[in-house]
Image (cartoon, rainbow, N blue to C red; front, side, top):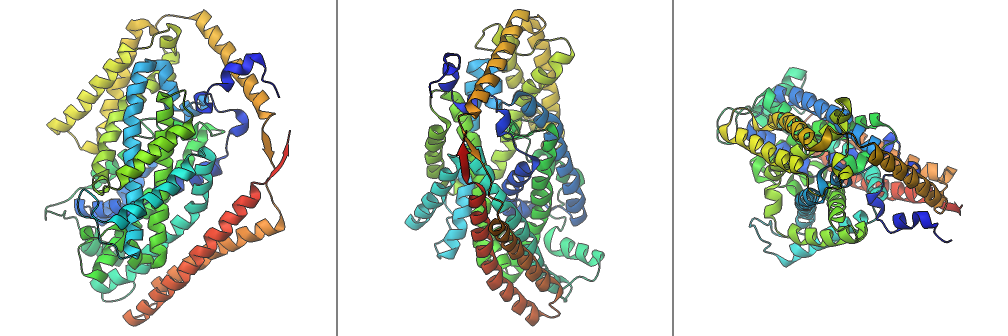
Length: 573
């Protein structure tokens, strides 16, 4: 079918540069699965050990992580989601309208680097599980010292790139399958190794009261003493750590790329699956698993890598969880890196840019030092992008409320925004300057940085043209948006219409996969609650290792089969 002349220019544009059309929006369940899978990830093993090394106390962990993660969910809901849903654009595309091409490209290059390294680190984490399974030596240098390790990284990375190049739907589908299983396995891992900790501290396999559980935590996991033997971090630091862990995606607005597909702004609350299951339950579970594995092996928790911890918590399923958890995080971050790269090279498709970035990512993943430095990278990356999120927040939310004109830079046909660049640089100077003088915990520096940048950008933009009115340009913008909607409606009628398979057999497949998860959870509870002595505990643990792995295989086969049946194409309209 020939393309109407009025739509020809849109056909030549990459779909990522246009607002998300209405017929491609998703319900909250997509985002619940997406965030649960991304944030129940391989990094949870690392962060679980980090709280131990930082010397947090048990009560501070339980309460501080709850408060901090609730604040993170609210940040997505009230800062990121409204802008994403109202514009239907990724941050990379939106930023070009408000800050100009020059700053956008600089910022996008920074994001390509950040998310490439994060993805590479997660691929390396997945490779550690495979390394452990095949008895390949641990990679302790900054460079790879074993050919087979490099080969494993390449194979693991190839799968990540393959999934990511197919876009948001592929990322969402993969995450939706993995999320329920990941949550069950992290929970079971804690239940399986808690008796080992209880035996070492109390002499029995099960704490008899909440206070005894706190005693186990205080004596063997979160002792309140850091790795240097000094008093550790307190409640405020734990809250700040949990809140700041994802500033790059909520205050920094990176997750506009994902939430632009949401039907409603309130779907920002779906991030709670990632925060409550991943950054609360999984962080706590990872600490218990790590401490339990350390007791069994007679080593310090900080000496263990994710492969060691996962194996002694979950058996062969532990290898799978490290691989899958690494994949889910790597895929989502590689998707973001591909979007940022495509925003730079607008004439190249997102799939091609993602493929190129993916090849670089796999190469970087071969060097183990990337994984060992992931936490400093995440911390500084968040502070780096928060000022940019503040600029966009000011432009979109504050300007219309004070009589300023949104998109004033594009209306003036400028390609370089002095107010935006100056605000970003001065925001960075403030944030890192406060860090140098050490006036407050580092985890909270994003707050004064964000507020300062909003105020400064509003002041500078007002002096540069934001105070003025542009009625002709605004009318042209509105007409352009209307034409884009007509194009997307025309495009919708050319696309395949999916008729999801809801047959009895598909429901049976769903039922079997859910049953496999239930059996796994029951097995974990059996280890925790039906192990009266050490010998029985060991026997129950071995049973869990064997049957838990069988349930893992059944779950993934049935869940994937059901997903494929639901995606049958029925007709073209």
